[in-house]
Image (tube, rainbow, N blue to C red; front, side):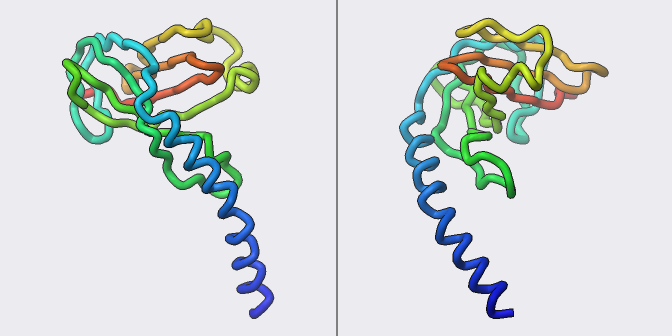
Length: 144
């Protein structure tokens, strides 16, 4: 039992520098604009309704704790702004351009572009932003 506890403590200690490095990198991203997005239908973002319209999307610099085996840079929170005010917050999945080919075989947005897609069944809307060598995928349920 002591070995299990010591192994867990050692793994946690080794993970601390990597987590601190990822948190520092995320904080440097805070406020970075990803661009403008035009939503044509109501969606739910972070549990809040987000009306159709044009929004600026920016990085918050905040990241959730990664799941076991997940990269600390794999997700980041973004904000949707309208008129300079935060209208909603949502989690974005971050996929480097070098890895996106193994996930998406077609219809990838070109660098520095945005795509808004209604997914199969019209139940979800995906905002896909390609900026700075990364793809930010934001999946939101369609609003009622």
